[in-house]
Length: 263
Image (cartoon, rainbow, N blue to C red):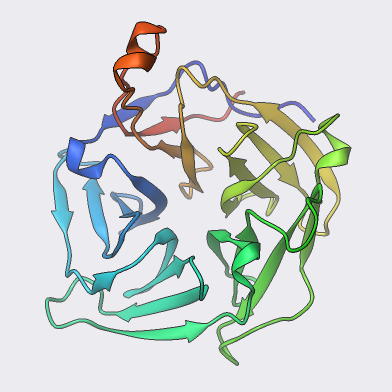
């Protein structure tokens, strides 16, 4: 499978202010006129407008390691990692009176869940894990969370096997997950160690893996799709220290970038 996007030619790039340096997850909303996003260290939703490049910071709910988010109607679901991995559901998230509910995922912290997206066909959330328990393994799990029962299914929906596309000691560690609106293929992006995008068919068959240029996307943390099929990626900022600057590492702002499908 050839990668259906040209990552060297974004159709649009939104450069983020320094206060958004730690962007960690994205989700298109409002008929693809806004990109909702979260940052590390806060249970809070932000909007970046595609119409006028403005930003909105919605209600701050709590401190916490927000890894990714998905929006369903007016409810925001935020994935929280740490010693007790959990989901936060914020109803009417744009309201100053919004309140949240917390769901324990019953996952050991070693799974380190980082990716979250909505599967509208099954009415489930998909949760991609960056880590694995026990000895280092080349496999990473994707679990499903039922919105009907509000429980995590104990068996993984998908097992990512790095041995299919990496060699030696390299391991793919997912940081975000998204479902393509046209093909229903599952795309994941990873930033720890090997920076790349991989793709699985919805039935679990591996379809491809593609490396990312760290000079363009130094820390790719989020992946999403517009209804048109346009790919959206976000990267945290790169802020080198004095030693790293002397070694040639450049400062790169956090950003949200957009890529048209090829053909």
